Image 1 (cartoon, helix red, strand yellow):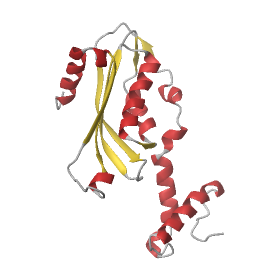
Image 2 (tube, helix red, strand yellow; image 1 turned 30 degrees about the horizontal axis):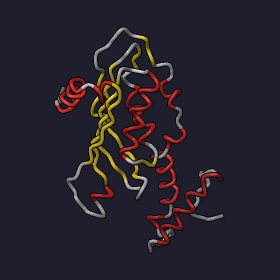
Image 3 (cartoon, helix red, strand yellow; image 1 turned 135 degrees about the vertical axis):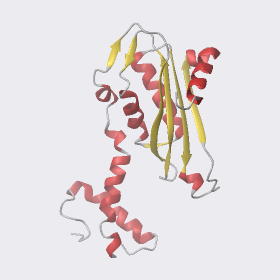
Image 4 (cartoon, helix red, strand yellow; image 1 turned 45 degrees about the vertical axis):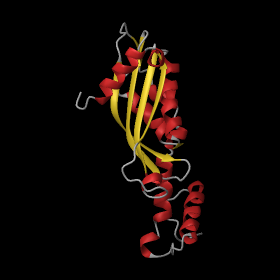
Length: 198
């Protein structure tokens, strides 16, 4: 048995840690030195957490938190913290997500929207896909008049490597239903998102 694998690590989990140990060797490190002995297990657990969205069921996350309500004004949850991993370089991107919808006759419990964002963010992602997945899922689940999602994020693959532009921010949006078709609805959403402290 590889001595760097601690007894607490389950056998089915050893594969990922062993591969990380091999990567440490490939980049020129000594995985047996004191500071790195437990790194493979730590990184494996970290990766499992950061990609835990693959094992989450959206229906279970919502857990009956869809309610029939006679409400037809815009619902917005903004400044939701987003942390994800870019699928191209496995480097983090992070920022804020703003979600709005115009109900037809159903609403989602407000605390469930950030959880829904996390389900998709905790996967290997593209910001564009993440934005679309959130919007399309809300559209499918409660069939509102429309959904708007905006994500503003900084990508370490741009900041730490490649073009190395430290102040760059990527902004993506997905507008469905009335948010796409009605300029006034879309403008109201954008105005409310821009209002800091609102």
